[in-house]
Amino acid sequence: MKILVTGGAGFIGSHTCVELLGKGHDLVVMDNFCNSKPEVLDSIKSIAGRDFAFYKTDLRDFRGLSAIFREQKIDAVIHFAGLKAVGESVQKPLAYYDNNIGGTLMLCQVMEEFGCRRMVFSSSATVYGMDNPVPFREEYPTSATNPYGYSKVAIERILSDLSVSDPRWSVSLLRYFNPIGAHPSGLIGEDPSGIPNNLLPYVAQVAAGRLKELSVYGDDYDTPDGTGVRDYIHVVDLALGHLAALDYIMDHNGVQAVNLGTGKGTSVLDIVHAFERACGRPIPCRTAPRRPGDIAVCYADTQKARELFGWEAARDIDQMCADGWNFARRHYGA
Ligand code: NAD
Ligand code: UD1
Image 1 (cartoon, rainbow, N blue to C red):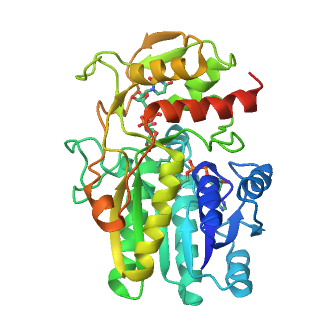
Image 2: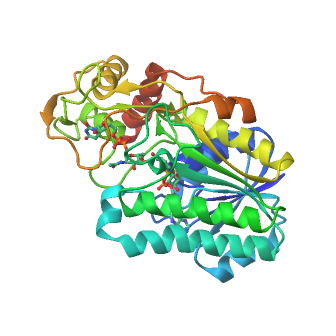
């Protein structure tokens, strides 16, 4: 099968490309490198031992996208390309709506034109908003608190409407929980530019000596140790979830939202301790006020992924931190 991967040079996309190549799929990768580097493509090739087609183009570039579909016989699309920083989305809502929603609309139009109607889309647990009880189940109402989250809610809606309007479409809306870790080779991983917003890249940079200490955002939540609880999932497990979703959409039409998480909650302090075990160094921490927009607890109900895809996450927190540290250590020369 020939798969187009949008945003394939990014964190989750690159790991998914490795697994797709390993499974024998032909790949066409497109990215504009707005949040990634071209060197990642060489790392994917070197891990997988196989080559693939690459197009440097923007999702919103009609000509560029059309050229891909004209030149390649694409069977399905895995659509990662998008902007993902919550805080930045509040500062630049138009850029987020334009890139995420505008880009997806353009992609759907070109797919329609070329008769390719199978898509796996990167959604997020952020669509569960602030008011649902855990574990989050796919049938819960969706909502958002920031432009990034609204872009995911809107795209889910657009892809659902499209599937209703034409039953030839087959779409999987994958709601990721908190992807962390890296490929065990240490060649690809998460490398945010500037000061990281998310917990794991921040902890890794403290361990590597690039940042002084971790601010723990709130220690008075109603959780076992007072710190926020999340469903961290190894990025390789997440990548494998995309292969399972791809198999599913090849045989089933319509639209399905599916959680990709482990179903287990882990606190900020649990993560700090696991990372300390992985790197063998202390992670200095200080308590800071709660971060606006954070919920106390977030974890997935994983039944639907098991039933529909026959998929479940296999790697535990220690493995996630060990692989994350292996990447950070090589990357930052620590
Ligand atoms: P990432 O930023 O590492 O990867 C996204 C890739 O898309 C980058 O390589 C970027 O250069 C590219 N891109 C962005 N806009 C583009 C455009 N208009 N045209 C072409 N390429 C473009 O992010 P990631 O962590 O790999 O996330 C992938 C997807 O998963 C995103 O849609 C994100 O919103 C979603 N997601 C991520 C997380 C997470 O914690 N990482 C959680 C939930 C959902
Ligand atoms: C954040 C985003 C969410 C996005 C998700 C995955 C916000 C408000 N939410 O969620 O929309 O889908 O990332 O990309 O940004 N923490 C600290 N100190 C830090 C960083 C984080 O204590 O320096 C805590 C947080 O309060 C939280 C946990 O660590 O309890 C995880 O934070 P983070 O990695 O940012 O993920 P989310 O909050 O789940």
